[in-house]
Length: 166
Image 1: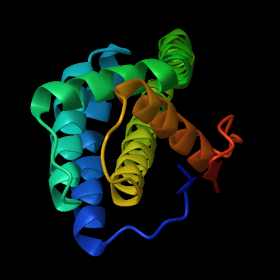
Image 2: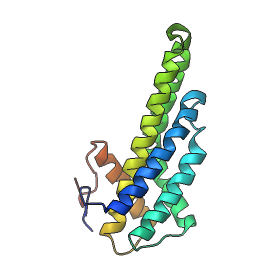
Image 3: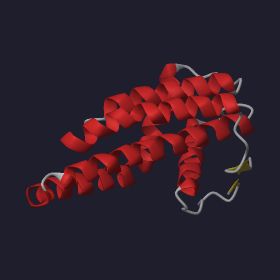
Image 4: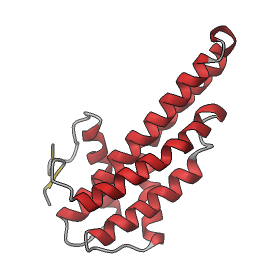
């Protein structure tokens, strides 16, 4: 099953992805100030709702329980990068805060907001492209591997799966 990372996404699905991306900006402020993980609940709820909505918009349909499994598994796949980045920037920001008059905390908030937005946008686009290019979900493990590869392509990481093209 060949999947293209450049497959066009219809406007209604782009609107859903953009709304979810913008909504997580506020959650990024909390996570940027307090620390990594404090924004996980809004991220999880948003991602599950986005997956269910995108599946419906593609005519595939997916229940919330299955969407939760997909989101958790995909987050675990890209989570090492995200958590490592968030942890390093938060620790650095708090250590530098006394010397920067708090500007390092503002920079960390901006970095966290940006990372939340990028991951949500790339994940949403990956989900949309998956649903648009497949007729049915054969196996959740395969689906998650494809989603992780598509998110990686958006970050400029070559896909380890030969059937996934940029």
